[in-house]
Length: 195
Image 1 (cartoon, helix red, strand yellow):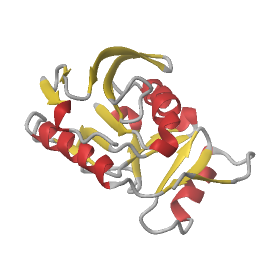
Image 2: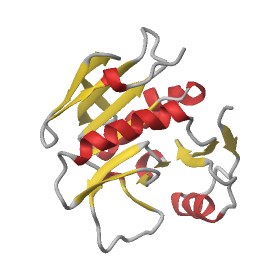
Image 3: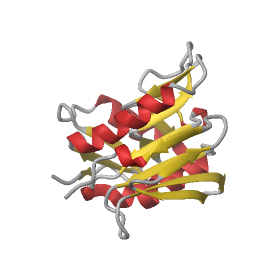
Image 4: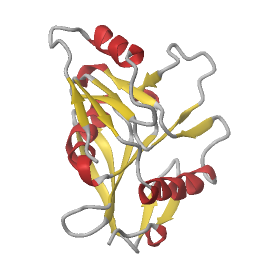
């Protein structure tokens, strides 16, 4: 199943767009994001997709500080890119007095992880990294199950403007190292390969 886009008034400002996103009745279990000003509704990720995210999450818990958390389904706001994005994983410090209950500012994230789905891999490869870099998120991990050269995980860092620098690439089966503050090696051999 592929993603669905929902029309909205292009004259709406960011606040109205967020209010629409927050207040609309969306299909239960769907993933609803605002990507470059367009509301996108996607089905819940499949089993293998979730399994990869869960394995990364398990490894991250072994190295993050006590006052940080690994979040699934947490929306992060990038108003300058008209984005309300929901990465597969967000690593961020815990905020006791969060301003909004539905999302956090993207700049608070230390790492975001996206695992591609066949139907919307373009967003994970192009639109989302541009927004994450613009927000200044230090690290972006793209686990691309549908990469043209075969499944691979790419770690991006050193954001400048809306562009990241690729730091390392690992084909599935090779280790991928996350630098400080994580200092973690992820074994991509644990990731299921689609047939």
